[in-house]
Every structure is written in C-alpha cells, then in structure tokens.
Image 1: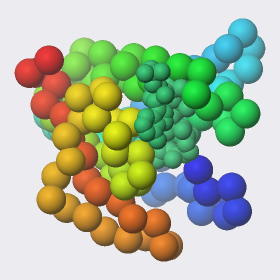
Image 2 (image 1 turned 90 degrees about the vertical axis):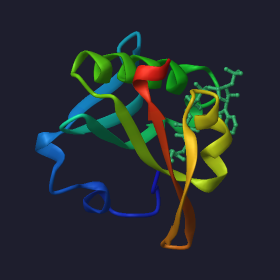
Image 3 (image 1 turned 60 degrees about the vertical axis):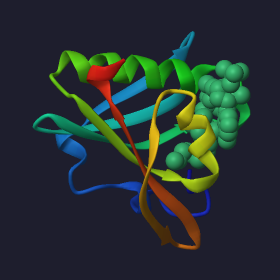
Length: 119
Ligand SMILES: CC(C)(COP(=O)(O)OP(=O)(O)OC[C@H]1O[C@@H](n2cnc3c(N)ncnc32)[C@H](O)[C@@H]1OP(=O)(O)O)[C@@H](O)C(=O)NCCC(=O)NCCS
C-alpha cells in the first residue's frame, strides 16, 4: 500500500484491537485487511494484495469474507477511507461513497460505507 514508506508508517495504535484477515494461496499470504469494530459499526483498514498477485480475485474474496465475519460480530455499518481511484472497486462490493473527502500525503480519499443489514 505504501511501498516507499518504512514499516512503522503502517502501524496503528489500535492494531491490537483489530481483527486481521489474510488470504492464503497455498501457503503464501497474498492479501490482507484489518477490521476495527466499534459497537455496531466497523472500519476496515490496510487492505492490500501483493502487487504481483493483484487482479486475480484474492482481494475481492477476502473483502466478502471479512464482511461475513463483520455481520457475525454484530456489525451493521461498515466503512473505510477509500483511495478515490479505488472507489469503483469498492462499489462492486456494495460500498457507497459519502460526501466526506480528504487528502493524505498527496493521495485523495473518500469515505465509503455499506449497510450490512440491507444486503
Ligand atoms: C485494492 C486491492 C486490494 C484489490 O485487490 P485485488 O486482489 O487486486 O482485487 P481482485 O482481483 O479481487 O478484484 C476484484 C474485482 O475488482 C476489480 N478491480 C480491481 N481493482 C479495481 C479498480 N481500481 N477499479 C475498479 N475495479 C477494480 C477487478 O477487476 C475484479 O473485478 P471482476 O471480479 O469483475 O473481475 C489491490 O488492488 C491493492 O492492493 N492495491 C494497492 C493497495 C490499495 O490501493 N489498497 C486499497 C486502499 S483504499
């Protein structure tokens, strides 16, 4: 996600409170995402597929699995800070753009959300 940054850049204070999912192709970890639950809502962060493995369906499968697990944990509203250029990807999975936009380190983001109860 941030290949030019040191590993500490992606560490979060809340990492220990998250649920961390990984998609394995045989024994190789190819895609990751972290879910942070706060009551009935949850944010997912740090979603990335190994650059060599992108476009093979791994990220999508992982996202769907994470959504199922979120529902099982009682989450009804799922949200994320999506890179603006990735919004069409998330829309395929039912996420909707909100009006909240921001820029971080030169990258444009939009907050996206999905009501997991209205699937
Ligand atoms: C976003 C990311 C995690 C997707 O993972 P992936 O394993 O490549 O995704 P998939 O192969 O499962 O793609 C699923 C579907 O979305 C499509 N898709 C992938 N990237 C897309 C994009 N930017 N815009 C629109 N559709 C996209 C794929 O074509 C595929 O469609 P299909 O099922 O109709 O064939 C991956 O591109 C990545 O790691 N990017 C760099 C880090 C990043 O930007 N993370 C997201 C931060 S918000």
